[in-house]
Image (spheres, rainbow, N blue to C red):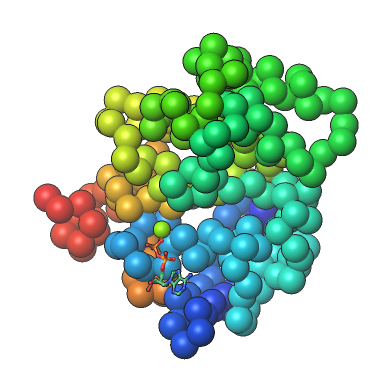
Length: 236
Ligand SMILES: Nc1ncnc2c1ncn2[C@@H]1O[C@H](COP(=O)(O)OP(=O)(O)O)[C@@H](O)[C@H]1O
Ligand SMILES: [Mg+2]
């Protein structure tokens, strides 16, 4: 396995608020890695800094060995990083299909239609509803649209911010099955979750973020049995 993403000493500020402080982590190609932490820990800020929507105040981000710390967000998409944002970020009065196609905005190639069909194969309900306004779909179906849109840029690394938020448990399982299937097809996945149990159950390795700093890291299945993780994050 080779390293696909490396963060070294990454910090990020909002004015005087320090949201991330000296964060270092690495993700190997083909892994599912999760990041857990309480509300306000800095999880979204970390994902947005990787995708270039927030800028780092110090430290570096390497993707496939190349320094992308000051690359624009669209160039990061072209190089293979796609993000499914917290709250999904759909345009509710655009159709399902138009929302999905927005994910191909960096592309001009002839493969776009084939990749759209691939999204529909993965999520058949979206094909049925392709002409409906995205805002009329259920929460789970909207999350499928958000994942489908991200896949339209053919990412090597998929960043997911709280994919389970607001969804019923049975729907969450569908979304996570789709994520596991993506990994089997060669996509590396970095999932941010407030639901620590879900994250640990579905990932290979997990990092724990507290107040903008990584405080722990390990094999996800082992962390499920770690006393301090159980006490702080699993509530049992
Ligand atoms: N746009 C912003 N402006 C100012 N502070 C922000 C902004 N976004 C987030 N923060 C602050 O940064 C910290 C981390 O937030 P965030 O990354 O959203 O955490 P999480 O996703 O773990 O809930 C919090 O203290 C939050 O209030
Ligand atoms: Mg968040």
